[in-house]
Image 1: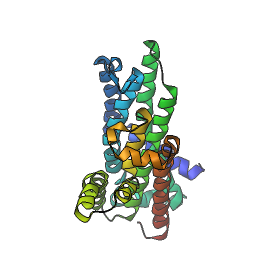
Image 2: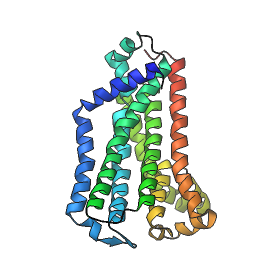
Image 3: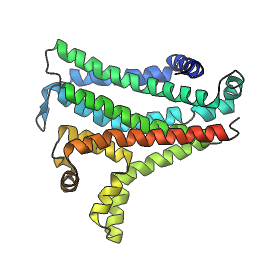
Length: 276
């Protein structure tokens, strides 16, 4: 990072470290891991997974619910909030470019959102080593990268919305509607379309996998359930079309690339319009 972007990154991280919401967010994941150990979830078994593997399966499913909402709510107000509060105008009065400010904000948000999640997983691994449990390192690193990919998508979406929104209320409203649409698009809307208009099932499944949230969900499932038995007949289409390894690579790269494209589009708008 160049000097200007690093200054914004450092200032934003320091501001977040003084925020109660950040420590509540961090404490939630730490407490969640602790509770899972105390309730003996590592001693239960699901589809052959036991110990830390069982804990990681539960952790990734909870993260799929919590992380997108937190990223959207906490990030979508970052640029437009600074504009409304006069912070943006003050900051840009010093020799810092629009892009430096934008990407400094972007990477600081990624740092403060991603770090607590990774630390919680590392804490689970360390405690597992103390308890002499087998550590599934391959599953651990895949989950670490899968979580980063999902955060990148929602972070890129949030920064794009924040750059284009006129007010914080407008940004929050749009982000909430998009979140509801992505959740509904996973099952409810697509099944309704297929039943109402008798659309080909292969087309419906293909559309579903264009939804980054559905991609993350399926990618997390295929890591611990190679045959996707919990998804029923849909598993035949997915596994007959691509191999398990190919789909894992897709679930890692697609949300990440999509999120970066949205982030670059947000930066392009931020540079070319009167944001102050």
